[in-house]
Length: 259
Image (cartoon, rainbow, N blue to C red; front, side, top):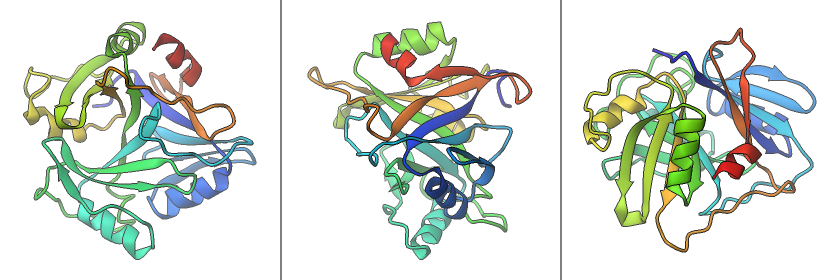
């Protein structure tokens, strides 16, 4: 069930929308929703969240371990099939790995340098058959947008109180010094009311809507890097009730002012 309010678009500022469209459509199997001189958009499902690429006179994205914008997460039913396909196309992708009790995942980067996480809906060993068609496109969904924060109280006030989103899952990763918080507008009943329960996680990865993932950096001296206007980077997201209604824009600058 897709919530009445749902994230409808993620906008990324980058040097070449056409290169991004070629990669996301050919390699990841997204459909091209729109393409003009300075803007392009792709999506797995036109009724769900789309990626919008906005051309800007900027340098390539510099991936930082502490960047405010980290990645998108794409969920699939069979990670091994997705990784094998990408490797056959010459795309560098990390080997599938069960990361603690979070998920079975791999990572790659797009032509502009933006990170992409491939996350299997089931944990390692729970792969499902893939239908005929594009090996990733037929099973992919834009599952989450990951932002890094250092003040989790302010971040929760913004996403919870200001935007009215619901905290769906809390996933501590203490060995690595961070904790993950997932937000959506969903009213679905969780399999387990305990937000830290591992039993909720595979259920969460199977949701048909896009979540906000906050990675809270827990170190006292942690600093988050915000891309300047001279760098490729995150421009914000939008949400709305349906494709027929004007979406509400949430610019990156607004989020940062509240965090």
